Length: 333
Image 1 (cartoon, rainbow, N blue to C red):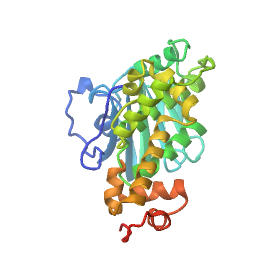
Image 2 (cartoon, rainbow, N blue to C red):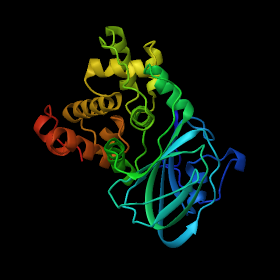
Image 3 (cartoon, rainbow, N blue to C red):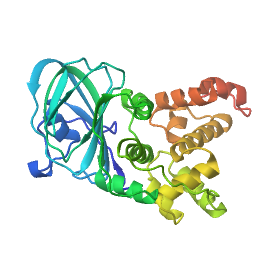
């Protein structure tokens, strides 16, 4: 995958509706184009790939109370849009004519999920308030995931509206914390989300057979060493799975399977553990402040560092420091 794009100091793109940098014909269902369709005053967006035609995008749209109104027809695109209601959508809050049939909200459930083929025509009506997280997956991305997993690259989405999907719900819950605290989703995290979500969509909603995953031996010793070196050199997460896979002379899909076989976890979770290991080393042998340690360990800020450290180590960084210091007089603050 291409490097992820993040915008402004928080790594979040927040732009008023209508401020579009592309021609109308270039519009895609993410960012400003998606905000225009739902007439929302602002949006948050993160991309993987070129700004105007990414492989993967995550967009959050929110709106206060408003009357039911018809949304503009979205431009057709060779992509799939997954919409997750972060607050339960009420029956009658959203309805549409999709491919000639009427669809809408049939029941209010947490993290209700909708799967739409953007090549199909749809007219829709919506009222507020609402809060949605949208995942945009290009057909090129899905085809590559299919090929790398030895399944047919031709597929047809089974459209569904406001259904329960536990995998999509869990992925969404996992990224809500950084989104809530306005922390950027680093490229490695976005790559991981795109790969997992794309594989799930193909298998659960496109009728793809079970992926033929051959038994693996994991990464070769030199590949493990090279991967660890690259992750330690990019603790902030500013690296992609494609770059790691290329360095190991593997496809992205094969690299991901071998990595999990070798390390027992995903690439992004391994990166987080390396950040914690770096922080513990600094806490135990230096007199740096928690803010300095957070940044040197690849965390966005001290708050993100403290939350992650406490979750993994079951103790606050300051207390861990007091219990594990190597004779340094003043604890970090």
